[in-house]
Image 1 (cartoon, rainbow, N blue to C red):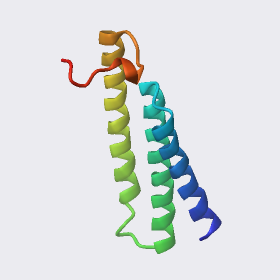
Image 2: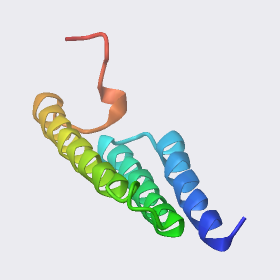
Image 3: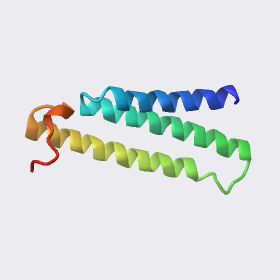
Image 4: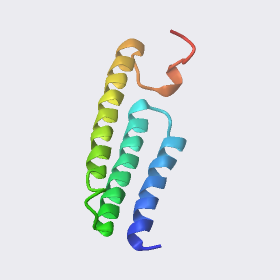
Length: 98
């Protein structure tokens, strides 16, 4: 495993570990998801550069566009949750309650 592959897999695993172990606030969960998407974007960009193929060149931009959409939807949910419940703590949210 090259140092670059180790770095990107380690950053993805750190984001995943943060998502699993620090689930107190919705904002921290969203930040961990963004860190995971950023590591995927950089890894996909380097992968397309290593292949030297123009066929896969739009893939990182597509992933970045989906990541921006995911971030905007997450922030909209964060604002809606904090307005209705008064907090962004995940323990205060009840999935079964409307």
